[in-house]
Image 1 (cartoon, helix red, strand yellow):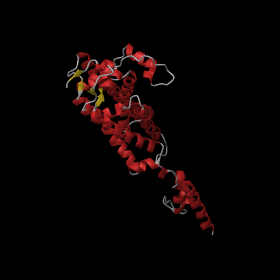
Image 2 (cartoon, chains in turn blue, yellow; image 1 turned 180 degrees about the horizontal axis):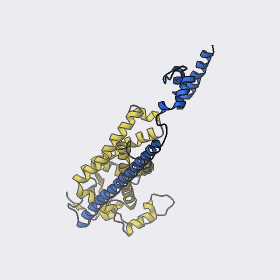
Image 3 (cartoon, helix red, strand yellow; image 1 turned 135 degrees about the vertical axis):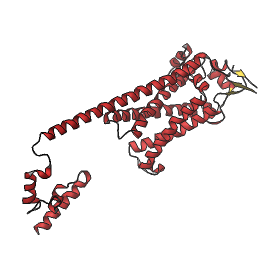
Image 4 (cartoon, rainbow over the protein chains, first blue to last red; image 1 turned 90 degrees about the horizontal axis):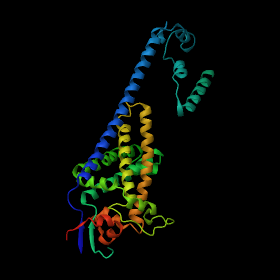
Length: 120
Length: 219
């Protein structure tokens, strides 16, 4: 019974093709990475410009802090925490600290019970 | 040619080892990927739940990339020969494609031209697998390592490319498995790649005549 094998060594054409595939892999990886870096930079630049825009808008506002807003203070004094400005009052907690997604039905139920308890 | 006796060493030890590593990694990657893409808990529970399946997917991905990379570095000669073979399309390959090697029932295949170490179908598969692996590896790592810093549009493109490439690869590998392990005309190839690396000389002389004529008898 004979055993057959490939001849040892490789030709110049085989070497060049193997090298070319590796080179193409490196180039494709590089182009892909460059693409990613460019998008990252563009996104970063956009975020910086957007932030600057928001800061510029903010600077032009007459009232720049919510706790210095007389209307907010009035809402607290007259409704959310009668007699004073108390941001963590029970009513403020229940009305302003809201929930989202799957918690909404539970929140509605809690608010309804809260109203019932207060009505009683 | 049909009376040739003996064995042909088609795949050496390191090639078989690399193929095994890739096979195991690909299976794990495919299963975990399907599990958490379609939220199939039966599969992800095999790996200890969705979170662990995700972790296994990432580290299997590292092996999936490192396996061939190490193989190429240690076996550049063999890799170059492989690339040369799968990129070398001759009239014989065109002839094989016209008859689909006799594998498709409704295509007449009275004469199938002599083939290289890999037939035309295997050559195309090799090219697609290499391209697919590269795309999957290139898009996979940003999704893992830089998901908090990269813009959503880039990550979204990575997810789409990763998913569709993986889906095509799973179909290709399924076809590859069928022809290499189940189809009665070619299933002897399975033992060659998965076990000792040898194929019957008679089979090789018939299926890979061009390549067989270039081999040397060592014993």
